[in-house]
Amino acid sequence: MKKVEEAVIGIVQARMGSARLPGKILIDIAGEPMLVRVVERARRATTLDEVVVATTTVAEDDQTAALCKARGYRCVRGQPFDVLDRYMQAARICQAGIVVRMTGDCPLIDPEVVDRTVQAFLDADPPVDFAANRFPDDRTYPIGLDTEVCTYQALAEAWEHADQPYQREHVMPYLYEVEGRFRVLHVRNEHDYSQLRWTVDTAEDLELVRRVYEHFGGQDDFSWQDVLALFRTQPSLALINTNVRHRTWRDIDERASD
Image (cartoon, rainbow, N blue to C red):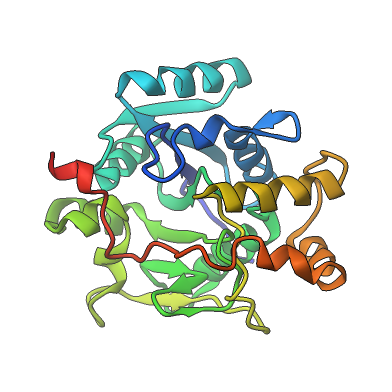
């Protein structure tokens, strides 16, 4: 295992202003707000020195900041649609050497998957600038376990040069969309579970995740492998949100141009 001297900071982007499911990050899931589910699971990743919430300066995210304060999470506030800038400011404030991107609508995020992705990044020889467990049109993990890792230097370069709205909103495209621009690594799972959707962007997604938490008695210490086992015994679960269209890395929130 490679020794790490730079701070590895997990940054969870989260805002109340979701277009498809407003307020979703504070929606209850088995007795806890969804954002708490995400952060608490992410904090179990042993490769992360800290998990920080990056929310917006919009008034409705006063609730998000208040929740973070109450739970003892560090919270950084910034641009609502320029999420890349939000990450950059959070990385600066936290003095990150390595940035790990996660999102506040993935309450099944798995610390083992986070650790596997981060460790692959750290162990890469020769070193890489960016690693992820999914790329556009090429994923093996369920949607909702997405983890992206980059150096602070790579993030700063993207922040300085990315000039397209989708690059700013989705944070990392500048690092992987042009072959050879950066050194990248794809962390793949042995089996392909890309057809499974475990993120929360619609009412159907929320119903699915709530059923998962209900099955585990409202606890959050289950693994993604435990969820896979549940889906094998109850295959109808996957049908709940099978018709939901997943946003692509080039989709942008139309409100950003208002």
